[in-house]
Length: 215
Image 1 (cartoon, rainbow, N blue to C red):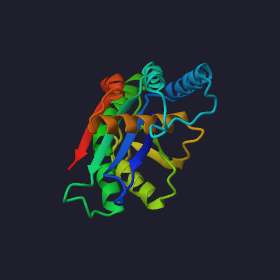
Image 2: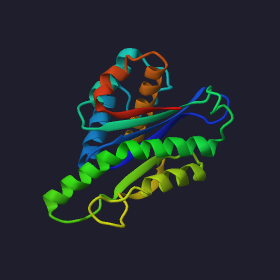
Image 3: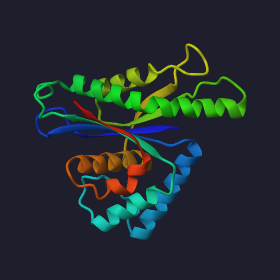
Image 4: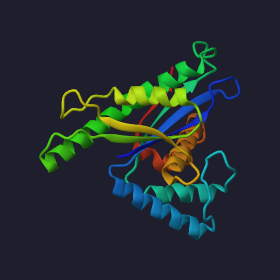
C-alpha cells in the first residue's frame, strides 16, 4: 500500500469517456523506491521536475521508456471506463458516473487488499487491518472524493470483524507526486488501448488487475 487514483475525461458532454484508474504498490518502501527511480529517469532524460501526463505531447520512444522504467517496480493497476456515448449513460450526471467507477475500482481491488492483509497478518502474527491509504488526484471536487471514500471504506477487513480495509482517503495534487502521475499515465495508456492504440498498454498489461468497461 498505498493506492493512487486519477481520472481521465470529464462527466459532461465534452469527452466521450470518463475513466478512473487506481495504481497500487505493496509497501511504502516500494513507493519511495519508485519515486527515486522516476526522479533518476527525469535526470537522464533532461526532464527534472517534469510532470508526466499522458495527454501531454511526448515522443513515443520517451513515453515507452517511462513505462519501461515503471515496470521495474511492483505496481498493479485497475481501471474503470464509462462510455458516455451509450444511450444509458449519455445523460447520466457526474455523481452517478463517479459512483459507478468507484464501485468498480473497489470491487476489483478488494481481492488484492485482502491478500496483502492476510499475508501481513500471517507474517506478523496479529489481526491488524490493512489500513490502506488511498490518495486521489485533487480535482477540487469534494463530492467526488466523498464517493471514493465511501465506497473504499465500505470494504471490510478479513482479519478483524467490523474494521475497514481502507484507512485515510485524501486529495493530493499531482505536480510533486510521482505516483499520481503514474496513475495518470496508466489511465491514459489504458484509454488509448480501449480506443485502439495498444502500444503503451502492451508494456504494462501484465500488471493489470482488471479493466471494467461500463456498461
